[in-house]
Image 1: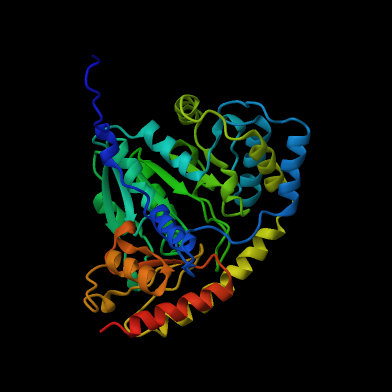
Image 2: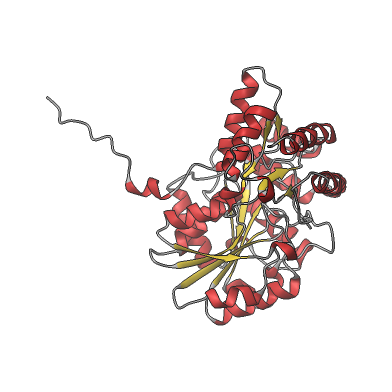
Length: 397
């Protein structure tokens, strides 16, 4: 008889949690499949279609049989296109050996963290944070060091907030500007101060530029444009939001060559290359017309203004104005404790089951009085969903 099969899951999997945003989407889809009319504010996904020129480039790739493996870290053509676009947009000077193409921006952050963070290393993460940051650091055996930001000041991070948390064990600081979930944008001067703090101490600064083109004030900025930044700055980028290409799964890292090689080593034994067809589409996205980006930004600004106005009209709700990305992060703390609701997880569950609106609870992002609303959806859905949220909160006893 064979030995009894041991079914215990590896310990390292217990270090990470199920993505809260994916969980919300799954619950909303379950209701939808049962015929329930759900308004979904959960997923951070543009409702715009991928631009036609990008789709046509993918079709050409298929017709020309560009359907084989590529280099594990992406094609030279796409790496060059990434470097060219980043140089044009931000004034950087990366070369293809300093670029790696991965399966989405999340994959870049995972590879970077696994390649650079040793067990016991500290990683500084501003709060609120994107759900994945904490889990990838935990998976690497690192220690998350959280820095609270001030809601009254729009959740903006400052160097003075960061400095007390830097120690001899600090390996990296992870910054997302514009921020998911708060929409906060880090002031350029403060970003540079943080860079000076970290570079002097040999600490990596990982800048997640996922939403870098969706700013409502000022011009897009990359800390990687500073002289000498390549030594300690790590850029994680993606085509998903900028070009409405979420399902295409194309992300990129711009880093020093040794770090790129370390990431490549890991990627070659996990996913290997991103999809060949998506890479051809990515080249067209980066080198082709860019008007679609401004079209989306103008629509997001209109939606932002509408959503903030409506949220602030709801009793017991306040909301800092997002300066970028496409999320609102309202404070519903005054509504908690009513209707048998004690935290934002219970609030979100009851909102979905009773009002049929999907949002993400603030606990997923490190706060306990907020929910995240994605306004990357139509004005009709925003109106319907916000009407339901208003009624739901107003009726809480």
